[in-house]
Length: 412
Image 1 (cartoon, helix red, strand yellow):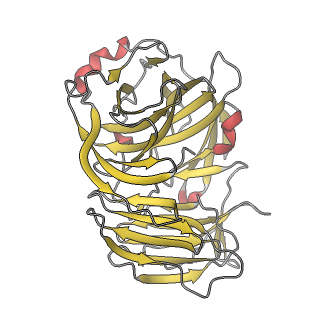
Image 2: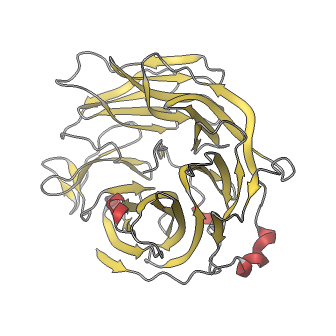
């Protein structure tokens, strides 16, 4: 494994170099549609995780005074099934640590045990206790049709147990296999890594370093290279966070947001597996990216503006060249929060305060319908497109695998 410090290419301060590709880009705006699904919030419960399906139904993981429980509801809001971890419970307090879905099942995990439930009726297909203590909630890592359960960071580093699509634990061989513990030994470098697509990891410890630090993954989740890219800015300080939009074995597309109390700069960076930044677009907009979804020809992003005098929400496209396009302001209450879900078509989970209350489907719109809610060049908003941008349609998404990458409710 190697570590490389890379120099970013120069930014083109205008999109003029890409205007010749305008005819290849779908500029159709997206807006909130009229199709909705109301959410039933149990008394005294808080939402832990949320998994919608494309028809407007969903699986929700709730926490209340009696512990966690799962439910699935139909698009009309009728409860399809309800499930709670059975008694007897393990010693101490049992809390949800991870949730991941597949085409047919949902896997719920605590630090002590796991249950594999049918999406159809909520029946438990398999269950067991973890063989190793402590499960990190962000490290259920799909790679192809295998699921790696990563146990973190004690003496000797991370290790992972391996499961197939039936949650049957597999036995391995080779130099990375530890037969005594029945795990794969991982060679991850120091850092707080979040894996994506079984091909990349992003270090979340870089929040105060103004650096995009990534690693490539090979077979058995072995780290093959580490790359670090400084994110330059005329201001000092700032708080950095990352959101991966696309990843496969050949490249990574990530938006990094550098926040100050009164300003935010977003860097849309494309990195190849060889550690080369091919382009980086820049968006100046004081907003928090709350969600992202894959479109047939790019991505859709939801964002919440952080200006104290104007609080509102927007949707905007990112095209197949990785370019953020003009934003459409949502026509509703600024006190709500919107979290875009990565479904096909995309749905928006809407909150009032800390409580979710509605799923609303997005729709393709027309410029005439959103006239007056579109903005591009304002004193606090500007785009800088890199003229070196190339078509990255191959990163738009692979949906052929059994396991589905989770959707994060926060911006980590």
